[in-house]
Length: 371
Image (tube, rainbow, N blue to C red):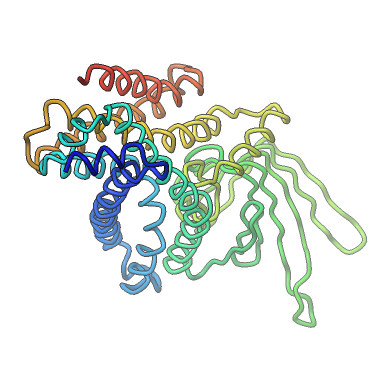
């Protein structure tokens, strides 16, 4: 068996490299299917409290769950890659195939590069999933849920939020924090004698925040009332408006940094900087999204020292546990830095690239120690 492997080692097509990468990819797909199924189940369970609210029913909840699966798969890809690489290479180790490969002259570096090649394939597939498929499907899922639960409102548009609330139409340009929105325009409609709607007043506010249930406070409020041939204007530091619209409904169309593709995040960060606005949260989302995607390659490589080292003789269960532990620890470090970095004023690049740099150092150090 060593002779055929030795021939494969020098074969120009690198059949052995493709065989190693295929093992990693096959097991990663299987792991991803299990993780996505579990994530979808949890997503569906979380929506049980919403079923029955408005016209939102069980079929709607199931449809929303299916629409959210690509986003779930994109977020779980790094952990699935690590577990899949551990299982795939561990399967070869259990059958002594890796031992024979080493005897045929295959170096640990070459096995690591084959695992990295599988990681690159997963990186490309994850990019298509997370940048092309997931964002529009997740946005549509939010719309389906919001319009089902709050069917007495309607909204439209892609540049900001357009909401119809009774005789008012609201335009909201951005969401700066939970329950805080900026760039508010209010258009008040009035029925004429012939039954047609016409514009009776318009107003603008720099910022709106929910101060209590059904009450919004508009800061920097300026209004114009149209009356016949005259226009009456007024300015107030703040004005409170009664409305049944709540942040959950507005969240269906407001911009969520974690769900935007990289190009959109990059453009929005440039827009904020050009206008002298706070962009830290968006920069963190931008660089963290890129760093998490690149971690897929490193996590595939990290499986190699475990397979050749302490987990060489262990079963699939132990490898899976190790993969879950390492993946969860890396995920927690990422989330902790992202959530607390703004509080301590940390640089967005440090928040995003710090965990990836530590992972890279740990991976290359572990691979270098393998004999």
